Amino acid sequence: MNPERLVAGLDLGSAKTTAIIAEVVGDLPKHPAIKVLGVGQARTTGMRRGVVSDIEETTRSIRKALQDAERMAGAQVQEVYVGIAGEHVKAMISKGIVAIAHDEIQRSDVERANEVARAQAIPQDRELLHAIPQEYAVDRDTGIRDPIGMSGTRLEVEMYLVTIGSSPAVNLRKSVERAGYRVKELVLESLASALATLTEDEKELGVALVEMGAGTTDLAVFHEGKIRHLATIGFGGNAVTSDIVHGLGVTQADAERLKERYGCAYEPLVDPSDVIQLPSTVAQGDRQIPRELLAHIIHQRMDEIFEHVAREVQDAGYAGRLSAGVVLTGGAAAVQGAAELASDAFGTGVRVGVPSERLSGLSDSVEAPRFATVAGLAQYAAHRLALGASGSSARKLQLGGGGVDKLVQRLKFWLQDFY
View 1 (cartoon, rainbow, N blue to C red):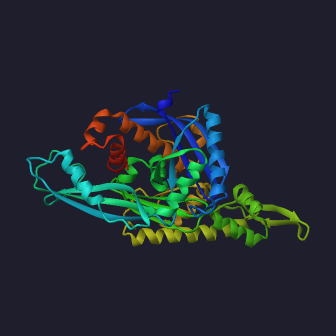
View 2: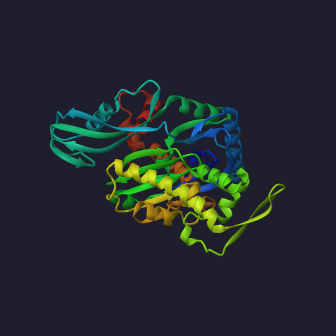
View 3: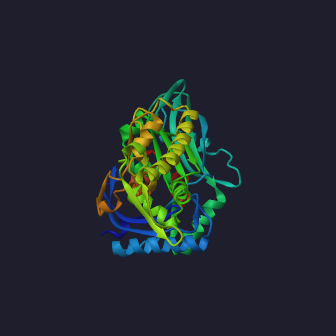
């Protein structure tokens, strides 16, 4: 194990906090892969809909998850890549235009254009998370991916700026620091999940990544290889659980168990003769219900969530343009029948996304939809490490001095091309 190649990811969900420790292997800097060394999980009690609601509780969850991962890996880490999500995440398109003085466009021109696009005024209560170049235009030619070496007098970039609320970010960092770790970088969760579950072809053809967490459902639309639209719907697996609580008169813990053991999101898949035993109570004694009733409750709520997502895709102008269909991921996507129900709701092909690309080591311990984000964070970290290892990129980026901090800043913003 090479300590300099260790990376750690932390996914703070509303139900579970998951940590991963991995070693970056493979061909650096072009094709980094990760070898999973340790995974840790803890119940989350201090998060609500993707936002820290109790710093003490969140700190406890972080410490437990990371310590469990460290124990399994037989190694300790100081810094982590942390996923962030929630309804405070916003995105916008920003344009940057510069004049070209010489014969052909150079890397420095591209960086100037990126800098202009990024210099958009961000409100004081928000911070810039990612600046992702979408495409470039040289004079009147649009849709260019890499303009370096082309001739022209004017270069324009279209940049996708993702911003987050300052206070959710501050509280997240504070919780991680109190647990004894340093936040290396905050990363948008749906982008991390996309790294772990989507193929290049899917992103090229057009795909919607729907991540169903406990507190929220996140949508990321990719088309022609780039991120095009982001949205958060304020319902997730917890809404399904609470419907079961009210519909069947059981406790939260029992509702969760019933959902995991007998749940089905698509009613037609359930055998009408199936009966399930409900936990007995003093007041109600032994009870049995048709499994169809449980499926009906789950079906109704998940269908409603998918309808919200489908409306969001339509409003963004991508309905009918997603040739690769929909990829479902996140904890709530693991329930039987989720893909069938989603296929009905979206009117297109749906698959459940599981981290599998460029994984080795204890990879079977993350092969479930709920590990998409944390595996993606480790892959994001591997790309970062690979970019750092690429001395030539580093030298090119180190313009105008500023040392390591300046370099890290530039890396953070420009080399996002793996999206």
